[in-house]
Length: 324
Ligand SMILES: NC(=O)c1ccc[n+]([C@@H]2O[C@H](COP(=O)([O-])OP(=O)(O)OC[C@H]3O[C@@H](n4cnc5c(N)ncnc54)[C@H](OP(=O)(O)O)[C@@H]3O)[C@@H](O)[C@H]2O)c1
Image (cartoon, rainbow, N blue to C red; front, side, top):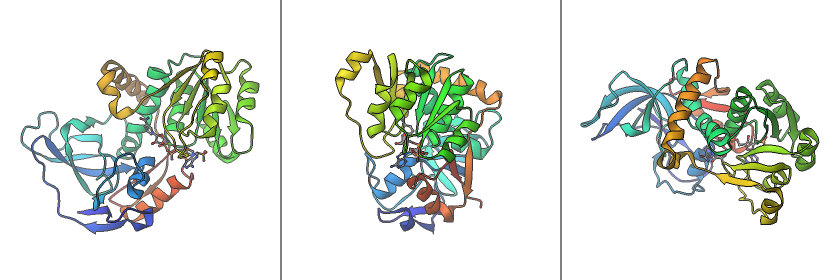
């Protein structure tokens, strides 16, 4: 089978497509034919060896996929050959086949194509929990989304709009803001050229009720300074590479609530919320909600796909289709 291999850590261009033996399912594992694999921000970090956890070379890049179960190993109870599934793993998804623990697989929500399912799992679940479980969003809330044109950002704009929020999309260009408006944002701020704090205050009057931040850096403090009293700031990630440090007097003066979470570990702490999100996201899908997939690439073009993420050029999600 073909797979996108990282043989030495480095830039996306260092990735090479190789022919590998087909994987075999061990105890508790399933082999899945990858029909689509989402490209996520951490994939480029793992290839460059700049992620929190190092992946020893050589490895197959890619961490999120949707596909069809081909075979299962001993002790597997919840999936069978022929099932269509979506899943996540640290590496291995940019390939024609992947072997994973059955525990990492879940059924594809009714109505999603393979491309949609690959693009949906991590970003939409992250966005839902950021807004609802952690951010405690209510209809009518002013919701400021930083990095709004990216993967998590577009999912936040989409879900918040559907749940009755008034979304302010913050992104690096007018063109990216226009894209977010088409997804439901009612206002936009170009945080490269406009004053984020002043613009949020002008738009909302009393400040943002919620800030969702997958970007970090200097924008975080500006956004917290523009929250309403008791506003919630949800830390989701640090796409700009800089972990913000927030003066605690802001928290005191504004009665602000600063929270964060990690989708990988949320189920350990809030299984109730994870179950609720599954039901609620399925409902939103049945009403027509779909991830925005801007481009689909073959395995040979995986470096280009990762390069788009690195260069802040992705709108929504890009997906790899191993059959292309
Ligand atoms: N907490 C969790 O469980 C969780 C789950 C998923 C993802 N994450 C994290 O959330 C972050 C965003 O993920 P994503 O999938 O939305 O990524 P993405 O699709 O690449 O979007 C990130 C956005 O951040 C903005 N950005 C600002 N400075 C940037 C820089 N220096 N480099 C790249 N982008 C920059 C870009 O928009 P503009 O150019 O418009 O500013 C870009 O669209 C990542 O750090 C990821 O690891 C966390």
